Length: 207
Image (cartoon, rainbow, N blue to C red; front, side, top):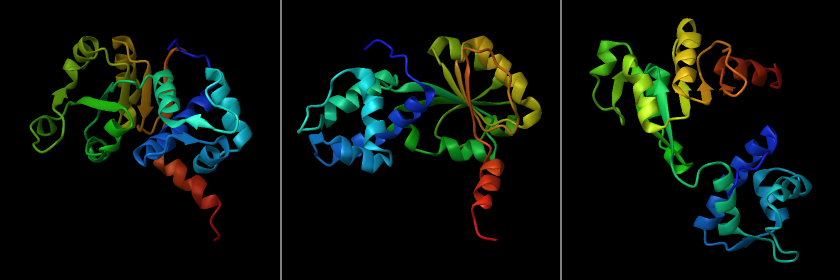
């Protein structure tokens, strides 16, 4: 399917719909109504129908959406019809935890390799993927057509590594490094700052 030009917030919700549809498919459901899918995804039915309208008429009034077809359509739009290659840079405590997370592959992403500069990390055993020296990173990205990276390096190295990733062809970075990165307009950065998230969460908790 040709890439559909849709808003970023809709893309986020499509990922949620995809997860919900996968669960329904695994449970043997063949069709689902917009109201039921919206309830599972925790969105308004009108919002769900508006999001899915980007793909044309997939549902049937009175019958709902075919689960398998809708799941395949959304995954195709998200680029997840096949496993998407990803690399991880920075194998500290957080990087190790993410490497051991098996949910990436289930959701359509495969971490092909990790990169670090610490000799001890490079020799470490028991990690699910090979850890290579960062000097090999650019060649690896090019050879394997990697377009996404997970960044877990210390803040002082974040921009430098991001520059190298972008130069090598990476177009999307999931940034766990506690720094704000400057990248070209065509590169998408999603920043995950756990301290900020906790600070925001604490605001809503009774003191």
